[in-house]
Amino acid sequence: MVCGVLSAAPAVRAAPSRGEIHAVFWSAEADERPLADNFFRCLTRGTSFSGGWSGEFGMPTVVYDGSVVLPGTTPARLSLGALAQLLIQAFDKGELPAPVSGVANEYISFTPSTSIVGNLCTGPTAGCGEHNWRNTYKGVSFDVASVPLGKCNCHNMWDSESKKTTEVAEHETGEGLARLAGAGFETGDRCELLKENLTCCGNSYQVQQLAGARGATSCEPINSSGNPAACMADAPADAGGQDSGTSPADARRPSGASSDGSSGGPASDGAPSGTVYSDASPGTSIGAPGANGGSGAVADAGVGGKEGGVPGAPAAAPGMNGGCACRTVAHAGADRSELPEGALAAIGGLAFLIARRRRRSTGA
Image (tube, rainbow, N blue to C red; front, side, top):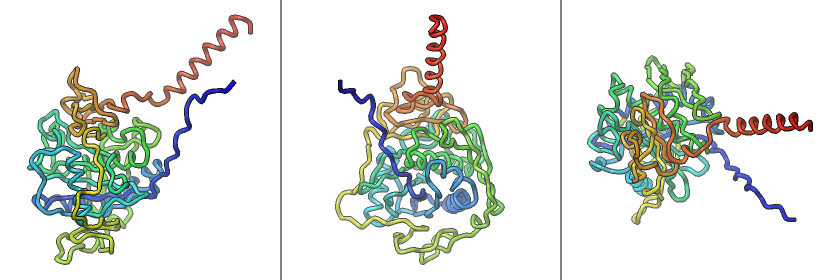
């Protein structure tokens, strides 16, 4: 008798050699660029985020590749998929370093306050940040996240704009990098109540704890290390000294960019060379109080928030999860169908106990 195969062995996915973070601004509103440069320099050089936390997901290090200011601004209304397309166009034009194969490529868009991505920051129950990790450029995966600039009307929980910016940026960055490294859960959503303060160079940045590789509820602190490298400002990247805290120039960086190293996309006169799953693109968000983190029927509107907290709201598209930067919420989308951590072990143990009792009762 030929025995059937119950299940195929899961494919082995190679861990990325490192994580690379890019901050993206538009010239219409780039006043928080110095904050982003200093914060990400602190996060990657002066805390346990790089090596400690990231190492659990097979990423030995996470580096900050600096910030880029793209010309103009973003549309008044756009989806997260449309935002990813804007980045792909910038890759093609050589304005933004393109994703690198074998690397977890993270792009944090600090979106102008004149734009609304999905339903982010549209009210006190709307989401505050969102990311999408299933985009590709010339076959290379990348995550794009939107962190709204300006006074985001998200639950009135931050007493300063800078705290909102750094916490939402850290949340989305951690989730995007972990997903690109193969994590099957969101690392930020279940840890949002656990706040942290990172200290580098005499400056303090508010963040939250992040889940480690053990599961979505294995919240871990991100600790400051006191590494003096976090206090070393890089040389100005632009010829005219556009920014005072950016990384040294290298051959792969497009003009106008601040970068520690990433490959720039070739210029192209044709259509963008990337893929964005605009109708089914998984995204995640810092969302609304009490939300399940779901989205509406349109995947790129998946910002947690209002839809996820309304009874009978449409289920999220696969891979979409919501969160709230001030509440603990459940997972949605693909993660909603997963068994909780330890469930398989518990089921196996219960079956063993039942079988043992049966053997005792029958004298076997």
